[in-house]
Length: 397
Image (cartoon, rainbow, N blue to C red; front, side):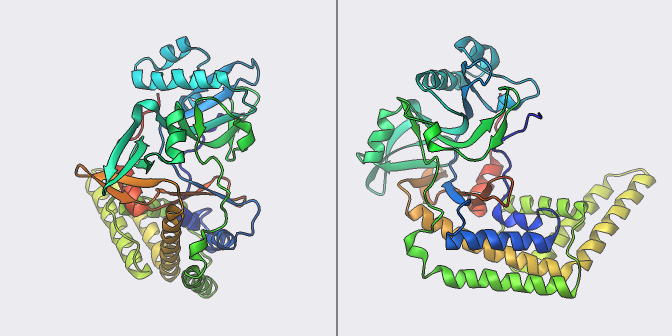
């Protein structure tokens, strides 16, 4: 069995449009998923908050030896790092003392439990990074692992529960396999598999809310109508102009453009403007690439590739404009719903800019749906993807 990486690179909701390279099927998939979310009538679909935790921890019992262990994502390395003892932690992660302290505690917590499953989650806090602070004359108690400062009001029941725990983790995946070195992920966690572990607080493992917050029922209709109408126009373009398939090359260029657009904090705009901007961006990249080539053969190959990409772009122009319009409406609906879920959360969220805290929403949500092999991220990318792009990638140790 292959050693599969887990809980990384989940697709964004709006990017499912390009999943499989068939634009018609991709847009229909997104429409169905969002429609079920709004209606709340799909029993296999559920929602969790997206927590900004680190490091990623794997905890449980070895299926063969029944020994308790903890690990980081390095359990999925070609040469896995699995920690059964404190000595293993020092041997595998001794160059990172802070990580070692986290793993020592996690191993101790694991020994206190009788886990029925191997679980993966993101650590949100230990007692060392809990803190009090004041914002707009309100006293808060909370924690920050990466970008987001999570907080509840001082003295609240949630604050007391955090204070009494030694570590908070958001578990997001169950790992199965015959051997600890060949695990694969099921992106679901049965709350009963965690049990009650003294000192461990499993935050928001499974949301009961695939149902929308109560305060959106009247507001959602108009926005859903715009999503539905933009999808109808995609269908019209599909039947009148082209088959709707993207080449692998064009898909990759559009994906790179999307990442760059997020880095530059460009908002979603009309489909026609989006198409023109994407086309210009791709043209500039080909120009830069060709200007660095010296051999005639390589230049000719680059020009041939550019010609094929732009032929596809121009052939699909009308459809792509409609698809980008559809994406824009999906993003606007998504960001509206993230705000509403945040308003119903126990936690207030803050980010730091220029040395000052600023209130924000939760980073987003994670939607689990049987029609997609991985969970789907619903993130306010203009806020958080941009901030995360500016951070160095976490080193897997």
